[in-house]
Length: 98
Length: 498
Ligand SMILES: [Zn+2]
Image (cartoon, rainbow over all chains, first blue to last red; front, side, top):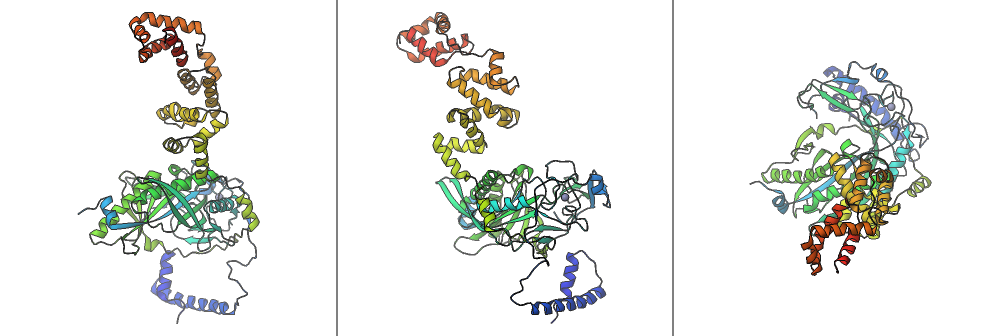
């Protein structure tokens, strides 16, 4: 059985706002299945002595003191924006949501 | 048939759930050093981290973690020995990163409770609200919808984003379902938010200003037929931004659910928006679509693993519980329930306490702050503490108790201080406000008053003591209000052989 179905890939594409053709979905579903299969084999190797982790460093509690540092100027902040108005980022209308 | 509140509750039992978002009052943001000032010019408090620019890396604000642990401890929670951040993925321009850094299945605090007192028609009742979790996340930016008639998204042709708020530390406090509140559900919801707000304020971790959005509440509500034992489908009402709105939103949803259910319609699990003007709700975005957030552990942040020493250090910082403090002060000052509630609701408890600590009589301190000063503040639409300092009020009360000011003169002093004429002593000097305590001066005024109303004086001589009121009034008038009325009364009655 496949680790990921074509429908699941289509749903992920929708959630990620990536438009995909039928041919691309067929292709990607197969590729992702291979990747997930490989990850599943790694999981089999991990014994009870290997805890799941989200990153490779064995480090906890990295924090900074609550100190204000200089921010960008509004001009700098907006310099990479495709559009801006009234010192704000301008985005197209947001449809169908509140 | 349309059900009203009472008839709805004769058939259905409400179940509540409350989610409160609290903006912490840290100086800098959750994951970067940008300032968190409210009301700053748009996009003046942003950096590569909170704008989600490629290559930037977040680092957690230590004080935000400590504030979250303090909140958990104050709510009787267990502090998780291991806690992680997660990415909540969604596409919406209020987060420039396309995800919000939050916590998912490993929140910092779990399993607490908060007891809330509710004033009901059957007397005070205590309800225990169990806390499911307290987790850390970051606030979103502010959008401005342009082009629509009402500032709403529908009809807008574009939106403008200010990311000053994006990344400000936010703590979400989620209750377990609160069962068996019956007709008191709206009051319990309100009392819970009010009690929580008091605790957060006492911890000094947030400004807890609902009107500025630093404390926000979502109300979940479902109904089940009484005796059915089955939970109904819930709705989630957002945008509930005052204590009164919390109460109204719960009552409104009870009526809406009941009427839908009675007419055979289903409740849709959805997010609804509270409408301040009507007290009703309207549907927001549909939940099924929105809930697929594909959470996964945040790879750019390391776990938070608070050790027992850190937690115990924080525990020593917990202040006296607001409810305990209130009971203690109420007993010490011998204040009736009603007056105590008035003081709490006016948010003047701290102020009155400080005034008392400066030596003022508690009853006098309370009546000046809640009476004259509140009245003037109300007229000017400002807060009483903006008008007078506790030092000024304590000084005025001291002068009254020494007999150097009458209540009437003291009101003039208050007026002068508020008009920025100076300190109480300066106002007294400038306006020449002094109690006439010289007996001979008072006697002169008394004789004058009697001469002007000989018949009244005759009545008093004849034993009609209440008639003396008019003469005392006349003496006060003659002395420009600068006499001590009790003293005048004493001298007058003696003079008329009473
Ligand atoms: Zn920043």
